[in-house]
Length: 411
Image (tube, rainbow, N blue to C red; front, side):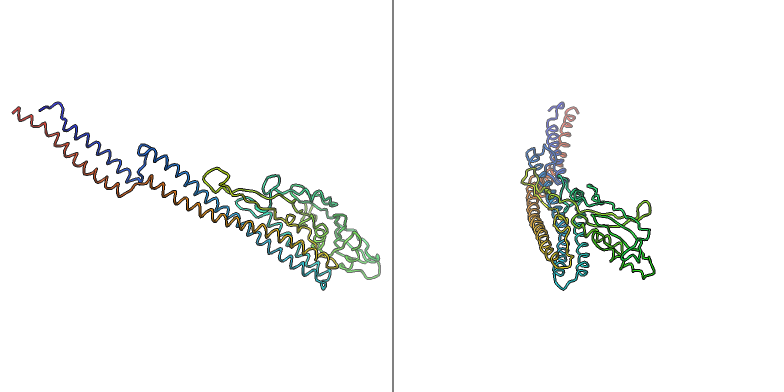
């Protein structure tokens, strides 16, 4: 019997330490839900799990990318739906104007609606965007959504000089304050005069007698002025419409404003140049390979891109209207082809999302098998270690009491 070394107590203490350590690990796994909480728990399992997590999170984001792609496609396709409707209306109007029962004034009224529809088609193409990316403008020099107006600027419309960057031009309006004779000289008028494209446009505002004969009305004076390269009007709206109509291939709108000198001036806006198609790709995979990209191509859908800028229906016969039917039919075909392409891409993306979500689900299940705690099995281990810990504590206490027997020998 020795007192310097209590080997029984030492053994009980060592076994209790092992049990306590195992119980601590079991507690950690049960509380965290993971059986791998550090690399030491399972070095290979940790590496495999992290690779799977990379794939899962990458594919989850790829699925979100594809959904964003669908949203962008739906935005573009929705805008083109309206363009389609406007082209259908233009076709209807062209067919109507091509009928021999229409007068020249009837065709002028139809042309006014056509002009508005063409302007709106161009506006839709210019303003439609998704997340600050313009979808229907096309690209200029590889820069999406950038417009240039070089074509209109090079058209050399007299007294109308377009800015090649903004596509706008200021047109001078000259006041006719001195009574000017018109017709047979018995009537004088005052108003405004505009020169554009080699034509002089005169707005007759008032008329007065130049002799004892009866004066002409404002409307009659405007009609008398209309001859050769001069055209007379009774309203500014009609004058601005005429400027646009006479230069409709390049001028989109003509509007009036008050300049810094408090005088009436006109501003013309041009149709933009024909741009290249916009190209962008959707990344729909967890890796960097080209196989994980879906490319999308959207053509320029503005008025010039569809070929409807300068669409003319007016005239004293049906020739212009008949020709316009074919122009609108070609534009309809272009929009239909683009919408079909967008629809096909959307269907593809829906399948892509379904596949990505399926892969994420299966990979998550595999990663769970590697890293997650089996709670039932771990509870069995925890309970076993808890019993062993209690037994170890009891045996350690008993071992510490064993050396007390030495005292009886000293008694």
